[in-house]
Image 1 (cartoon, each protein chain N blue to C red):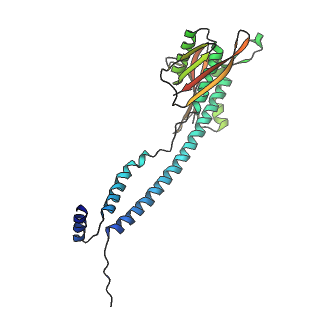
Image 2 (image 1 turned 120 degrees about the horizontal axis):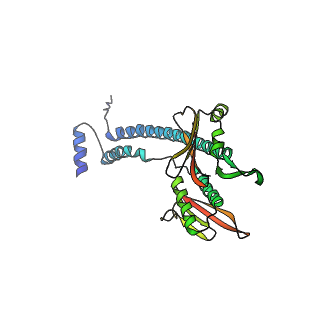
Image 3 (image 1 turned 120 degrees about the vertical axis):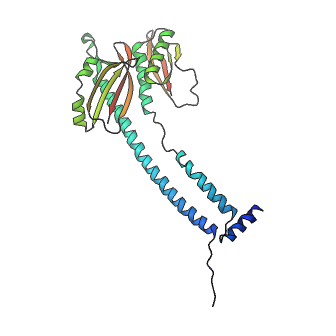
Length: 128
Length: 145
């Protein structure tokens, strides 16, 4: 009915227009403002890799002897780097952020530490 | 004698209009994509250069161990006196960059050391690193332009 009316009014004006053409035109106009949503850039995380390796170096140099000491170092490093840091060192573990890193891009380092004459595995994970 | 009557159809007009718009959009899109790729590669290059520069600063400013221990460099630990000796002007001159700066800040963002050389351009790339300074964790920021 509506189509008939539109065709009629257009024909009266000397034009011929179908509903499909009108809909396509409206959709096209509606799509133009959405163009800016196309994004080509992705945040670079190259710096996080270096920062995380620095945290591993920091832990190796500082050699935390207790859980609270490890937590203090992790929180300090997190504040300075702006990263969420989770570390495991000589049986202790500490984290600066409460949220899980499951769905985030995470950088993880495992490194050897000397403990009681033997080598143990320590690890540090960083994410934003 | 045949007589042809020209008429204007909205369908045809809309189709040609859509075609023109689509071509224009595709060209804008491809232009934006190439610009973005160029910008991204410049960003990546700048970031990597800043990271390499930060590693260089960390190495050059590394604390020297005790002579009785063989006067080795302590990795990840910096010495402000050694950073002070660092000739940024010479680096700017010899490496062809316009600007270089080194900042060392503490936990409360207090500035412990700052040195710069050259004039910063439109884009400055900075790399943030962590190091130890007198046993305390500090933030080192090396920037280039």
